[in-house]
Image (cartoon, rainbow over all chains, first blue to last red; front, side, top):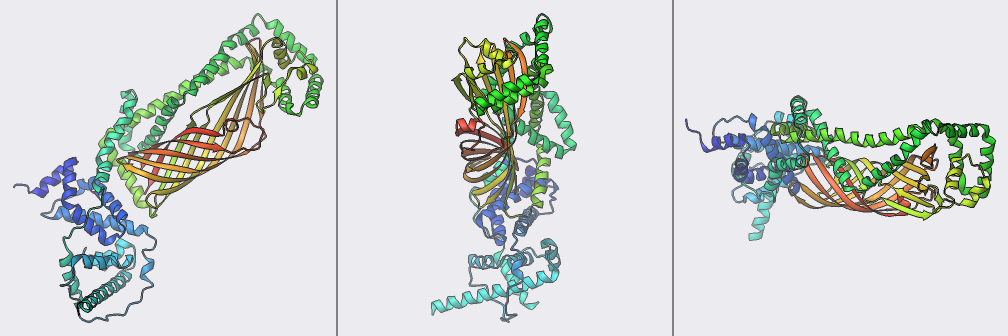
Length: 188
Length: 450
């Protein structure tokens, strides 16, 4: 059975070959920067978290198991998420935010329509969510974690994760709505 | 959860996007993962090889990464001791000083024991016959003549007890030299252990440890814990005619004559030198500073730090001429608390350049003056006096520093700089008083915990 490109890269990474790591960086750093930016707002922090992530990859590449195409990417993404969370947890404000936010429940019955909104705009909206909300939201939506898993990862109660997610979702939906309204208002 | 459907749309829409990679990220990663091998190698190159030591280090380290880390820190520290020695040319002068005493000392011990035994005994008898009241008289007179002579008084008082120490003197000076040699020995072996860092495997383990530490640290800000040792780059010599004491008072002959007791070694020196040109020479040795520091990062470029410093100031006073002289050695120990602000100017690879400024409050915790009377090349008396004055010394400093990351969280740094020492209103004669503005070089190890 012939090894595919990803497997070849992994075997080279295992040799701790500088060129291989540079290649890994070249291929995935853009995507990883994106993943990281979902969690971390400050640019310098993003830099630091990514740096730590790559060091972590370098260190634990031995424990990586190839399980088919895309598994390398999934693995490195997981590391970036873990490192991002680690960074977020250092921030003492992280849990505080969750308590003092009031939002009208289910004010919008219809799902927001995402079609006409650009990706950077959505990204901006996600990034504008308070730290706690954003973290839970990202883990739930993009990392497809259950509230139980999120609660464990962040060291919070399960229902706290659920409520934060709920509020984050409502907040984002509201932002999208507002955005659309302002946009249509603009065109009129 | 029906309205979660839009979130799936959201995920699909937002999946597989890319974002601009932060500037210099790859360089930073490469420096962390690949370049450090080179920097680590560059340090041991300076040292000569000792394969045995290396082998031992390797085998120990396989199983004891923690021990290894400690050794690593010690080794880096040791490198700086050696480098520090190279930087401070004045250490050589110390050797010269010792050998100077040594030149005299063969004459000191052996004649006393053999041919000059009679003379020596005679003098002892003389002293026993002239009990304390004579000395007391002398002291009183001195006190009347000049209040500055208190030190002299103390010297004389303690002479009595120190007679038997005379013969040990040669051994003492010699062992001092010997100590200097042996001190180098462990430093060298420690340095070889640094070589083992080439071993990539070890490095991995090491990093893992650092990482664990890193993970445990929940603070947002970074803390750096450092050790430093420094030397101000110059010592100082002061010379003036006549006799002198370390507290700055100058003894003059007429006053001495008035006391008129010739059994006294001081008198003997004075008599022997009466027709010679007499100089007093104070040589301040280079201050040595050790310290441990903690610094906290505030922002990306700024950090503030504090810690504990220990400084030893030593000065040597030689009063007299040729083979008749008084030799005093003053040691003052300071403990100080520095407050520093650092600003990072540039970061290139493993190197970080920064400027630092701050203040240092030091308090003398202890001090003593050892005085030796050498008459005709023979050590007559030796006395030791505690310095009761414990001044607080305040100084400000600024320096430019260069830090080199050796391994992930440990950096070694050199900070050449300038410090200004304010007057401490004490009568102690220190290098700070003589030269308030000093150039110095601080060297140290810094542990950075993210």
